[in-house]
Image (cartoon, rainbow over all chains, first blue to last red):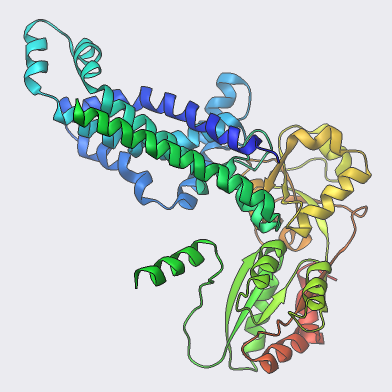
Length: 220
Length: 248
């Protein structure tokens, strides 16, 4: 049995979660504490991946990330290699699709913070940037952890978008969900079973970790 | 209610329960390989001029539709893109004797402007760079055949790392059309479609012709209607339409 697709999924989920949090945390911070005019437009844009069918989202990405698309052309100019049908390509697709799964829990956590902490920081001469790093982040670690786990789990199950922009290349973009789909279609049921059971176990362990973490936080 | 709902949701998510359209009168549910979309739409229109019948069309790779039939999908006629799958269904007693309705060809296609129009397809691929789109080599005959041709011409080792895989020949066409993959192996019928004619194709005479066979499942709602459509597909007027789309 070839477990490469499973490891590929884990790798994709890990890389995506890491970069997504780097991007989502400042965004959530601005949305909660420093909303500017027209922020509702950005907020609605952030929620779009929740509403759009993955096929539609994937179709747009295929066009955008292709050699004639804006993103694809930028990547080609900057790094000299195409973006579409590569591991980097599905990371970016999964990141864009995962934005709300990171931003929503972070926003919830941030808005629960005691605003007086931030006011005191401002009075003591903390800039917005340094209060983000020195006040907001250290006080939101449990929320950041659950955002990370949610992103990770969502990316593990990513299917429709990757089907559209991945190209099912073994060892590069053929992740577990795609591999199971292909095994089922090719009627290779024993392989489909093994990979599915492995995914089931991994997913359950992730959820178990979330719940244990939550219980620990509530007790503390 | 809850368990019932759950099992329906489960079945639906496995893609075993197909969507049926509600319509008055007799309805035939056709499951067709993706390469045959365009001719089939024209054929059903032509058939409707003499018969009062509505159609529900479902497309996929031959392997996917075959697997669905094994699981009892309620198709009234199955149009595969190969010879083996209808023959297997026949052997299992799941469908009537198969019939050949078309012979298709694989071509190499590119959506962009092309200068090397006279160059053989092998040289086009070797001299080019970028991805090459091909359909799933296990479930889509339009992927199996060009893959075998690459093997036979000792091109697989050189080109393997450039291959990207569409689930059906329809997705392979999209990958190539969007320019995401500069080249793709598609059906001649797609290359001759209005969208396909905007690009350029290279014939692949070295690749085997693809015999497309169909069959009527024994579970069809109205076998008589299905057989009538089968006769129509093999008749002269339908064959003329099929040939117009690049099949033989």
